[in-house]
Length: 230
Length: 197
Image 1 (cartoon, each protein chain N blue to C red):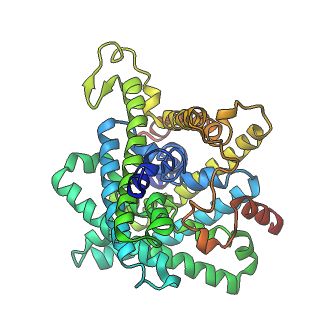
Image 2: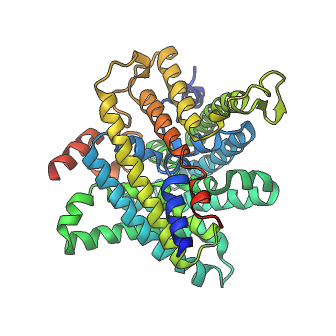
Image 3: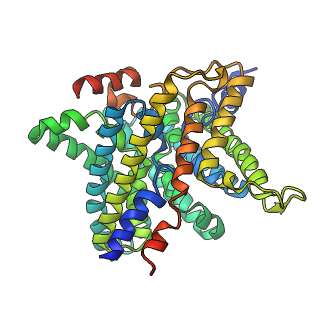
């Protein structure tokens, strides 16, 4: 497999942002109540990710190293605003369904994480491919979760009623506890059937957008130090 | 007065930011292993939420809205919050070093906490007055605190138990979060019955 294909595929399976790197949990849990919302959220985040990765990678030699995080945040916020306006204009229903989670794409760890981990070290083409792969991975994970939650929780799939399930739906799955539960099950399934060993730590510094400003080498240590200083 | 109590209670229990609105999940899963770090983090969140609302609400009402710049909300808010967090850190370090020592580690982490940006945007969307917005921020912060402290208790119990291999780590934590969140569902409807409007 050549490098381009590898860059694309790794975001979908090996480094799936949601199920393996565990980034962007908030929108995953919140918007996976229905398949349509999940796809909308995935598409919006993918567009922002693609634009920000391209621009950040193009500007990587211009942006001074010390102020790069604020620069990235401004760029990302700009793209989020654009997407927000487009969604408002062309898909008002989706805008209502996603609500607060649309502007909150700004603080989605996946986007800042990819900017920090990939776009500022690689050229524009590779970064675009990486963004597409990650975006598709994110959308796919959201789609899986939303399918489980909508089919079993609501008895419908993308709004279409499913014969037997419509009368026997488990509505708790579409509520908050169901979100946590299905997400937990999915990650457990990835641990079980993927060849990836369950990580000891929930969060590594590699995936943490604040790794830089926080200055610690691991979050474990962080907690210990906090405990000592208290 | 009743209105403030209703806003406060519903922000703490019914629309709990972590357990029913899914905002601030990263720190909820990341820093809830130990009680003292959970407390430190949530105190910092309460503090920053109040400061951020106090700063962003006037900006929206007196700067963006009159000039027709409402669409700049997202960009302006995230920048204000980021700047504010830096400023708070500097001020605390200089004048209240003891507080800085206990909250300092968590402050930089808060900039990208979606609960903070979420509460500032929701305050505007809900059309709250300034006082109501502050009460809502306080309630949201307290709700975050409650969820964090409760969950760190739940987690310390899970740590020592025998868990299937593939459930180790995050999956079991999420399952526990589901059960904790289930307990908060019990609060739904309480406010309507306590304060019929």
